Structures are given as structure tokens and as C-alpha cells.
Image 1 (cartoon, rainbow, N blue to C red):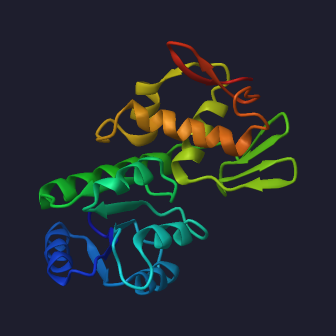
Image 2: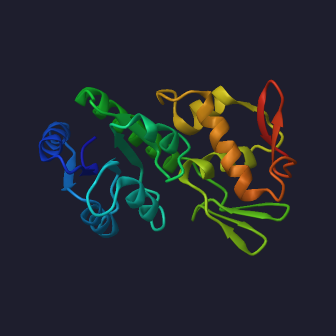
Length: 229
């Protein structure tokens, strides 16, 4: 994991110090921030391999920071949360996060999750992709990770885009929820099949004229989801 660069954001300095020490022991370069504004400023200056971002922060909370990062970067973001009521928000990736870890956590778990996300990111970068996919009135730019319906750009989270890209590049192929979870989130992702259902619902709300009668992303009842070619 040498040369990987991580931004750790938490207002509890002892937590930051412990995470920083542990990651540096694994050869990573670590920057630290203690409030949302400082985190956002650093993220704008440097393309990190991963951002470890606490939800509860001064000035801007972690959700706001993640949302704003997604406006200019696709760098992986892992949220830290101590509040159970935040789970559904993170699970739905309303804010564009890639994963979440609950407090209190074991530093070995944190390192394992960080490394797993970095491996998935590296594999994605190695796979050659078609630059533009055109499906009916939809245009998917795989390189810039932008989606258009007609002339209107659709704002998708990172995982919504990943799921759409996978389905659209394999039209009419039915993916079970378990398959989608393993491919898009990775086999070591701690969430369950509900994660996929939440993302597909939100994706349809953004790209379909009538989400209950989808034109693009369809359900094969009892099996999974597919993109109609």
C-alpha cells in the first residue's frame, strides 16, 4: 500500500492520532483535518486515494463535506458514525459515500476496509472501458462518470453510477442482488441486499420518467435487476 495517500477527518484528535500512526505504519501518507471546512479545503487541493470522514464535525458535518467532494471528485469516501440513525442515510449513499464504519471501531477493521476499497479502485482503473454508452435517450460517459437524459445532466452518487454502468454495459443480463453487491460494493462489504434495493430505487427516481414503470432498469421478479437493451 506504499505511496497511498489518505485524508483522515475527525474532531477528536486522539482518534486522528491513532489512525494516522497505524496507517503510516503500513506505508501510507496521511493528512489530517479536524473540521469540515478544513477537510474540504484539503480535498480540493489533493486527489486522495481515500478520505476517512467522521459524520459529526464542526463547521460542516461529514455529510455536507462528502456531498461537496462529489461535486469535483470521485475519490473514495468512508464515513465514520457513532449514531445508529445515520445508518440509513449512509446506506442509501444519499451523500455519495462508498462505505461506512461504526464507532467504536477496531483499527484493524478500519485498515482492512481501507485496503479493500483501494484494491477495488485499482482494479476498476485497470479495466478498459468504452468512453460513451448511448442507450435510447440516455448517454453515459464512463470516463468522466457523467450521465445525461437528453440534454439534462443527472447527478448520481458514485455507487449509483457504478451500478448503472455495470447494468448498461451488459444489457438484458439479469444480476441478482447478491451479484450486484459483490461486484459494485465488493465481497467484503458489510451491508446486505437491502443496500442494492435502496440504490436501484434512488437510481430509478433520477433516470426514469416513471420509476414504477421503468424504461431502463428493470426488475426480474425473484431474480434481480437488468438494463433493457
